[in-house]
Image 1: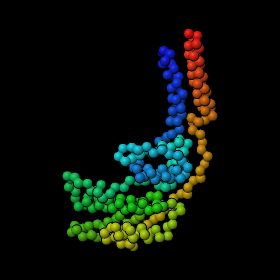
Image 2 (image 1 turned 30 degrees about the vertical axis):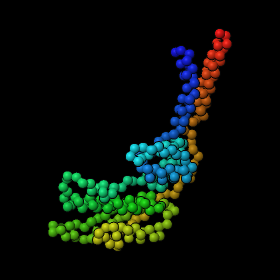
Image 3 (image 1 turned 90 degrees about the vertical axis):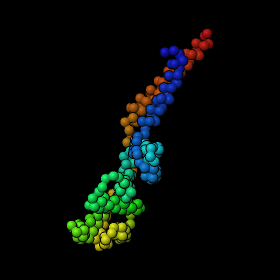
Image 4 (image 1 turned 135 degrees about the vertical axis):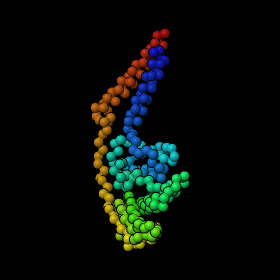
Length: 243
């Protein structure tokens, strides 16, 4: 290796060491998150004092990067708010035109599933709702195409502890009853479940690469590299002066 190559190597080693330290501090939190959810998650993390970097991805998605020390707290805070939220299919996505011919029973099943997805997605948009699920039971149809019975629905809602729920059940029952044909208000049941209270922020434990002995090792390595670089420059200048 000639002198010029050695000089370039010594100059780049401190930079490479710095990049290594910086890259080791960050870790991927979530990837492939849609843009809207990513922005909401960034807002929640920042409100909790957690630094986060959003990296744009393909198809309007994003990757969230955070300090590895913040990983447990970040996951906990996002989970308390129901993030990342479930992706619900729309009627248009479920009833995609294809060449397959479905039976009337299959069409009813697909429509029923589509409505549960649509309603669960709508309920999830309510402030304070962490997650929501809708289960619809349609009456059987006899051989003559006559319905035997009436439809019913069961709603599961997990909400934040601070959410006011006095009128929530009534509003949810009205919304669902008016969305399903022949569904009566009285046949809609809503079950509310309170999410856990936010955990207190605990002192962060150092990551493996930030333990005292490794910090001393990184510092010693940086010092050695700087010393080697200084000696190399000194020898170069001395050689020039002698010549």
